[in-house]
Image 1 (cartoon, helix red, strand yellow):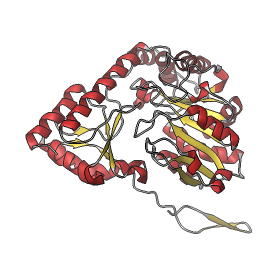
Image 2 (image 1 turned 45 degrees about the vertical axis):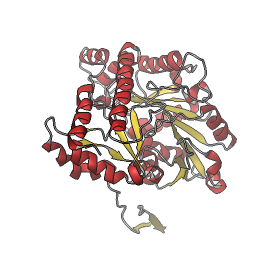
Image 3 (image 1 turned 60 degrees about the horizontal axis):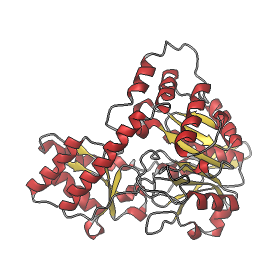
Length: 396
């Protein structure tokens, strides 16, 4: 894939060829959306994990109560907000970090994409970003947009990282390793303790994307205390380790764009200084809303039960339609093998016969090309329509 490169000759930079952005994955589904117009109730869009339930009431109230802000909010986040993030992780997931180990982000996607560039400034001798072969596509794009090598780590039959499968030459050049647990799209839970040890052995910065941590349904390998299903990497180590968190899924607050990263104090400080220079700032009212959301667990409990019920209900509907559907270990996606391995054919049939839009697995890497992802973000009533429509059309 073409990248923007410069060859320096004395004082002149010569552009060899322009960078051509790849198509945005979800734009490729646009032509199928029109099928929803034929159905009473319209398109049922399960292709993107955009929360559609009401945002956390405590967050909305806190944001509405914020007085007009005339000054710039701190890029790193208000002190009270950093303390709230640390307290939430320590209380719910067994870490023991302080507020100085936490800093804010404008959502988390911008952090995913910008961080490889910033880490490369810190370690210019390293040029490789390792990421799961089945994963959120922005991990690879962050490397590509920074002019770095994006190297997929193979996954096993349960979609977990197979770190033994990484080429030694790529390990030697690795700047960082991304992991995601619970994973997107397959919902797998990674062995955090083993991954921490591997990264430490090879002196690689480990970044754990944990935005689905509140929606963990089974016990993760090395999850820690028996009363905690969800596990953060920070309960195992903070040395050269970061964890990434978001209010988008936990609190249905995606449109407000708030997240934070936490872990190694030196890394947090280094990145926060660069981000300060880059002008990354979460608006003040959103920061106040985030303090309230992170300090309240009751709205999360409600959302957790919504997703648990929807996963089971949609799994029953799709199974009745003839698909082989299992429940995930975490997250709010169903990861379904397509008949004869043809994901695009299944996606097209769902759109045409039921007005349902889902994502072909290749969006998350070629390892997932034979699967389809369903995000259970619609209401129970909307999900129930799928069964009615499939029954009326004679099934898949």
